[in-house]
Length: 100
Image 1: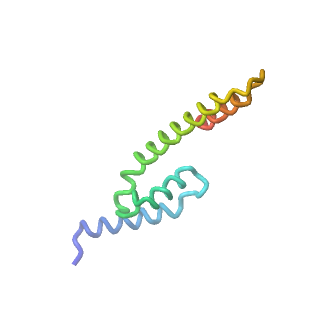
Image 2: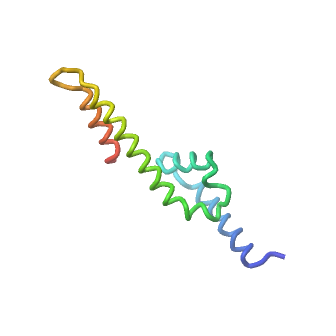
Image 3: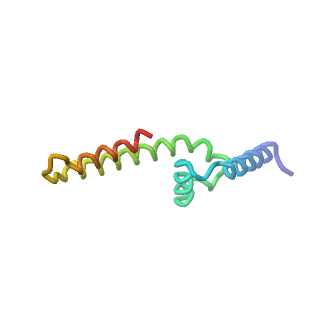
């Protein structure tokens, strides 16, 4: 016989599965969620996934920002010696990706 807690967890899992199916595919969060599932960070205990998603998305944004900055610095270190330095524009464009 199921306990009230078992029924509650089943309902949470059902809601989580339903909610996950309706998330649009074209959002960056979907890519992060997919990668997290491949790594086993979420999906093992669906009733807890919602608790961790905000932290996971924040972490992914921090990692992406750090990688963008590292790429921009590589561009800046590449000076082509011309008045119009394409490398500097490349660095600006990389950093601008984090503003959208």
